[in-house]
Image 1 (spheres, rainbow, N blue to C red):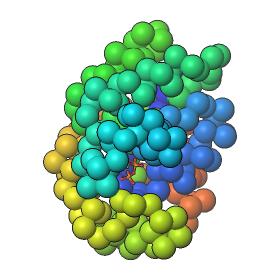
Image 2: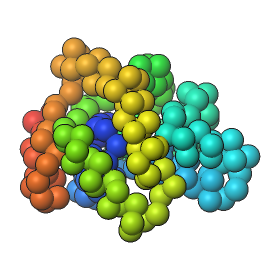
Image 3: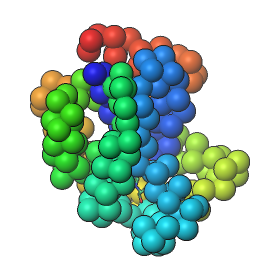
Image 4: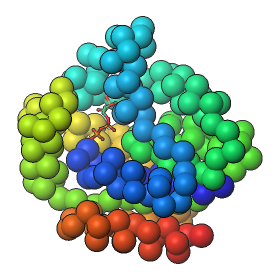
Length: 190
Ligand code: ADP
């Protein structure tokens, strides 16, 4: 299996690039953020539980993340591999990922980390707010999402770097140029 984790701060372009990568390599797509938003839209108990946390820009508890991930992974059949977007988001989740993939008799092929300066991220997210109206794309929540990212999520990159499994990509430029950089990086991991 080809299992990729697409990593980067909020607004780095993970969602945009994921769509293209999933298509090219024929992967199942797992975005914990999308799944949490779907639970909210469907009005499930889990969705109600996570709303305030997400609106504040904090991380949802690892227990709830494991619940939605297991449900999703158990529903996958005959896949070529999995692209994870927005997961793992802290070190506990990195260990959880190892466990989930071990259960499937596989492992993470590589982590692709998109690097984008913070001013550019803020600009992109405020623009996205106008188009998509995501309730967590407002300046105050964005600031907290960055804080959470630097405190809890950034160490995950170091963890995979030390295992020799993380490639950093320049995430500034045209969508197609960034996509080509990612494809080159993935092909080198194969
Ligand atoms: P972004 O990376 O642009 O902030 P996401 O859609 O990945 O957007 O995440 C939105 C919110 O969903 C996060 O701020 C957090 O509250 C929650 N979330 C998503 N994935 C996770 C995760 N793996 N662990 C904890 N919380 C998560």
